[in-house]
Structure formats: structure tokens, C-alpha cells
Length: 133
Image 1 (cartoon, rainbow, N blue to C red):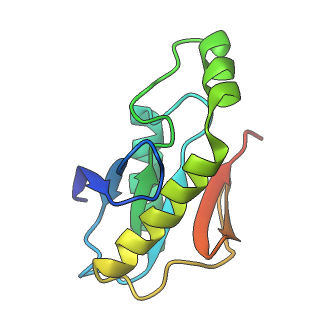
Image 2: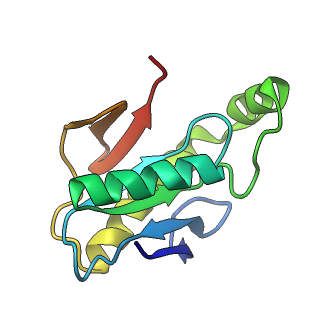
Image 3: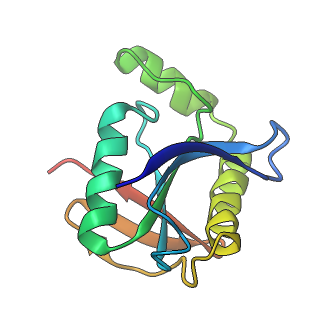
């Protein structure tokens, strides 16, 4: 499955949003915005996103709300989460959904469970998170 780093317009004062796009919105018209956990946008979360894209026949955009930072331990992860500009992150998540729509996805919302992922409609965009069982 095609995976590429992208930038998209966001109203976040930090500038354009960034992420990894998995799939092709012009081919697969259902989109999902995936937000990484507190470690950041690791290779593992990108691989999980690719699996979700394949299993659900979705175009997935992993939105990097840490903007390139990846935690190396619990202490760093806690600091990144604590210092996160939550309003800016929500603007990035919303902008990611708008990007998918502008690129050809017809639907970017819903409320479905994908294994350990929950997809939640939040501020007219789709926000997903997962938990450990």
C-alpha cells in the first residue's frame, strides 16, 4: 500500500499540519484520520495505520500532532503530551479530515471499532485512538 509524508493546510498557529498518507483518496473514497498515541508518530503506528487501511479498505492519514517529535522514554512522552497545544492539535486533526475530502474521499467520519481502535466523530472530523488490552 502506498505510504507518503505530506503537509496540509491547517489553521494551527504553528503552520501547516503534517502526517503520513496511506492509500490513495481518489481510489479509496472512505477516509480515516488517525492520531498517534503519546510516543509520537512512530514507525509502529504507521504500520498499524497501513494494516487498518488494508483491512478496512480506507485511505488513512496519520496526523502528527507532535510535528516530528518522537518520545524515547516515558518521561519524554509525558512531557510531549503535557506540552501539547491541544487547540492547535484539534485544528490539525480537522484540517487532516478536510485534506482527505479535498483529495477525493467522499466520507471521513463514522463510529466504528477496528480491533483496538476507536473512531470518534470530533468537531466534524474523524479522530481515532487506540488502547492497550
